[in-house]
Image (cartoon, rainbow, N blue to C red; front, side, top):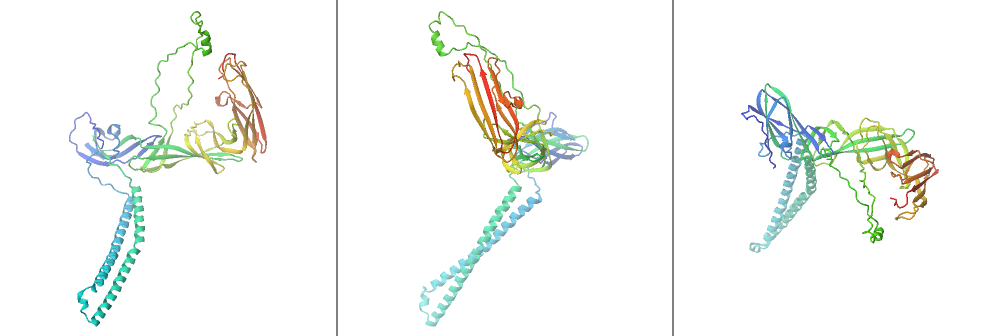
Length: 541
């Protein structure tokens, strides 16, 4: 067992008046995405003077220097931990555990009684077989040969009667023993189930350590000792059920749950539970900024040009224009100052070694706009979308598994993004097979590919068709994109028929969106043309 360090106060130790033994069960738990902060709040009552408070039940897997203590109502002087050779302790069991133990003992006694009865029947079989062996051996004895006829008749009659009685007794004993086989098998199964029920109530708990706190109080006082530590053997993650109901007044309901699991080795019984998005394993400090040295180098020549210039390289030095190389822009997202906690009101019991516990976090009702999202350049069908604004006062946490329901029917599993309060976003509820999409390249001219383009121009014409084969009118929002440039020498022009309602959607340059109604059985065609121009001697990338 791991030995724990001993922490002592600067004051010298003297004799202590009394000692008080206190149980220290887990009372409060804050679950994190990885790990949990565990609290044991232990009330005490002591007279005036110096005393020892002995706490039993602390987690043996946590070293003493990682435990955080606070004592209200007294002055903490010294602290020590003991993990070996602990004195015996009487642990009071709940009525539920006592009943489970009694059931195991009852079934075990019944099985033993039944086995004893079966053993008695087997002894009867053995006695009958011994009697039959004795009777069978009578005819082989020399004394039988000297008997008269009457005596032999009486002996043979006796042997027949006794043999019949012995065989009858053996058969009856065998039947009685066999009749106990099925009850014994059933009772053995009952015992196994009773033991499983008991094991579920009394999980395997590691031997706890014993903490001794030397405290002093000027007057008789009552107080609370709080022991706090972080355990890695726990976690929680959010989950959702998203239910979209269409109609004249569409409704979107998000049922939020938390999946909680712990494997600390002890049962956290009736604890106050808090769920937090703070991750103790995440980085706690910013990245270090170091000096950044930049330099330029001559542009390398194409190999063909190098061969042409080899002859005059010595007499005609080459002059190269300097080129500055820039780093690629890093893309990412940062969430500054976002931390969410949930306090779950009812007490919770979490046993180790069990599957995750589902804890409801309530429903969120939203007013969505239902439409069909289409991206014909990439997809063959449109998808049901619900656009909404998070008008709650809290962040909706992300989840990798969100069960989706459309008009009461399960449609699949999606992903829930992190949605800040007041943010606009969309959730999707599966394909609309009757909204068929087609993307057709009508014309393209891009010059000589892969070399220095002499035509210095590329054009493209593309048509998008969407056909509504359903019996429902749909509001369609179709997205596509055109290239964009940050260089003055690369000119990009585009035209669309009809023109899109939105350009640079959500700040994404070149992303376009068309919004239009599409009646049942109707079709619509959009045309998008792009033209790129650049100087000769450059390659388009």
